[in-house]
Image (cartoon, rainbow, N blue to C red):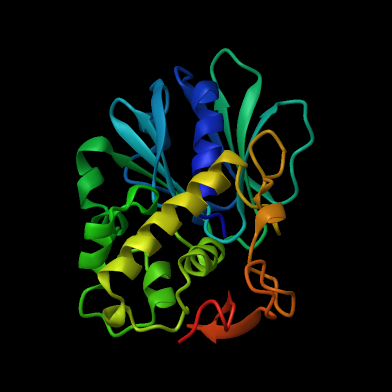
Length: 270
């Protein structure tokens, strides 16, 4: 699943492409992907003013409406000329006025979604109401508040978007390794020094991954077709049996909430 660095990379690449363009048609091959409170003709023909991100959610802004795009597990956004072959599993295409380029949405597993809501109703979207503070800018004091009195494993909380928005399996493992915290550690036992170390580790990992365009292990691709490069710099994720880059001990894997978690049993003691 694209996490914060991947989604932010997509947003940064698409922003100069989409700003000022007027969407005139949406071709949706499967109705389940597109949800709108008003008929399509009403939400089209409004210039795009900006594109931004909240957690792992992409927001495309026009004056009266906001398009909410959630890539989920395997969603991809492609920015391509109309004569380019469609990417496999393309389910939705946005056409624009005065350009032959198209915004194309492909999704192998079909878990993603597009929702178009009036801007005045944005604060009423349940997913956004529940979203926690953004992981890219999380301050130690805020992280401490989010973890306080929680008996849940720290890895589970980092994956919970209501606790902290933007982290997924890859970067939570990487941040915990950098902060020397075992993923099964109950959140409430972390002291102030550990929480500060974790907050700084989260920011460091996310910023470096963003600088490298994200992590391309499975389906993630940038709108121009290029892959991210952070997979070349992973410390623990997917490294079971390989030596820890800090102490040389073999990396181990365990399951937490049904997700694989990678850690060093020496550097990250429980």
